[in-house]
Image 1 (tube, one colour):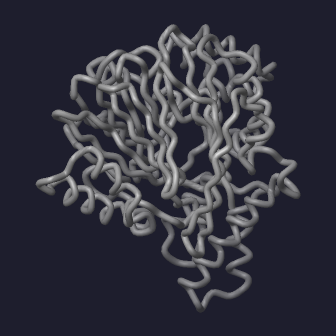
Image 2: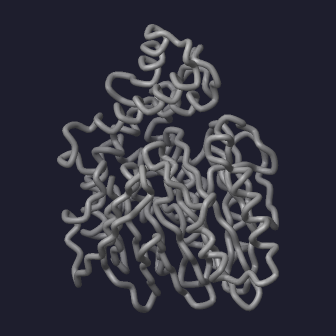
Length: 421
């Protein structure tokens, strides 16, 4: 199981490099996007209207990306970032301020579902270094004003009308200069799921904003956050990703008398923050360290790191070989003056590297069935087959049914996409 993590610089308007990213990843994104129930999907006109209403400054960039992509109605709707299918990740993050200002986070997910791309751009006149997601959005990043941002899943099943969080984070980095402006944007733009977003700027100001589709945003001074919002709302998911244990670890770590930025960052490569359930979509794909005062971004793995600045950004690729059974890594670094995109494609995003685009989905479905069977020894084959039918729909894994899987403690699975909220 490998992740080809690449760093790409396109400091200006989106162009050929972004276009290659789109061509590489769109087939898989399209399959995922179309797995959503049509009844719950807003049309293109509604999606574009939402983008114009909440993020009008992004409209010129959006139109340029659509043109580069040769976008049909589906791609054009996807690139608005509005109302994407539900999905779940892990993640932990923490801030330290004072003499040093730092935001550090772990991104926990399945390697095959990651774009594996760090982009340095200047789409709207402001340099941004960020980890790309959904082609137009970001998972974490920092802009040249010294504003850094990252997200964790909020640990709640509710889904509502709003934007995917990667699009919201992209907007913040493109148009906000400091924490005050970031908080205004985060509390104004609706999020379709629950997320905890931490922002910090070079002055040391910081906030953690808890977003949800069914209640008002909560702005806090939390210096660390994992995958719940004050209390655990989804016990099954919390037990799986150990959000409470990770939160307690960070609380104790930050209480240590000699804690500093480097020691805190190093702790993210330790258990329970560092996770190795890669096949179960809960392995730490990277640790990101943002230093706003210095304008430095560092991506870390157990045996390697990648250091970038706005003045000296290197196009490069890190090939990470995850071995879930032993949690060992074999990491090789490939440098080049000019990155050839086709050489560094994330495995699941390029169908040629798999027998078919459904192989990984069948594999993940099998993993969940095994887990459910192990927890319920009395389950018979008829019950397991019924569960498989719910999880797989016309050869595509139902992401909403997958989320429902974690919320059902027994084999008596009756959930469907229609009753999952």
